Image 1 (spheres, rainbow, N blue to C red):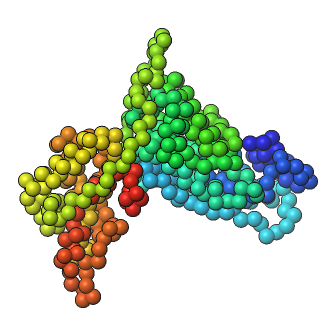
Image 2: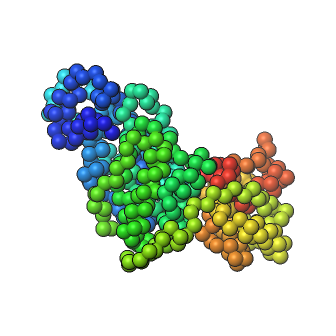
Length: 416
């Protein structure tokens, strides 16, 4: 971030009078703040992190800046499948030549509203994919005309991602930052942050049951993310020293824990040798356990013929053992004849979990499998009701299935 832009941001927080003076200055140099502003905020509210204090200096400064600049703003929920949960442009007053005091009161009103909204972040799924959340933010900022916009990204997250390419449960906490960057480049996963100033708060701040990171681990975590962000073209990357809350989030989907070390001196120890660097693996081809191979008792999650079902599920277990680094969705779907979406969603999820239980018995790690029920609203559903409201049994049978889908496959994009 250039010097003038930093002065402008500080002016928003310190005094609106100074803000007006700076924005009204006639300097036409390239270092002047641009006409428009875009701001994205990634909010990592999840069970292995501490409650985010949205009254922190960094957050309040950002919201004040957004309000005064009438910025385009996006709040992104950081879970396994990150999505924006709020987008708007702060409106400009139709009244011209407002006094500095009036501008200040209007901005404070917006800040209050934004503080309430940003606190509404709630994960919709277990696990955390911080890289994907940053990619979503980059996508939103990239949609703005770069020549006319100052662009900022604020990340409020521990950074201890547990899914996707940046899965720290695999030992990545000890990887060389440049090795991580190189691996992400191979799969075109570096977020495009060209022209964006990035600020990161609460990186490394975790909560029980996640154990605290050592000083070295926290430092390397920041270095890894900094290397990724700078490789994406970020102008600057700044980690703040805001104090996080002492409280942990309650009642949220559980997030896997990351193995960490202990605070001790290891002379001549090479932490990077403790665990492997990020593994880039090819996705497994989708497997469909159809009604003919794994059939359930009607409206139940009980196998009609358990012997045949286990034989087919064992083939899936062999496939997963051949690809030990791959994580999969186990998707249950149903026919639509009952026309009760809630019942069918619950039934399909229970059937997916029944398959997961058998795979667990066969030695597959539960953490690699994510059971999901889609009822009869899945992407692959075929019409199984005719014009008279009667079942088309052949199609209904096709809809009664359990699918094994690699989380990094194209099919995974249809899972929601």
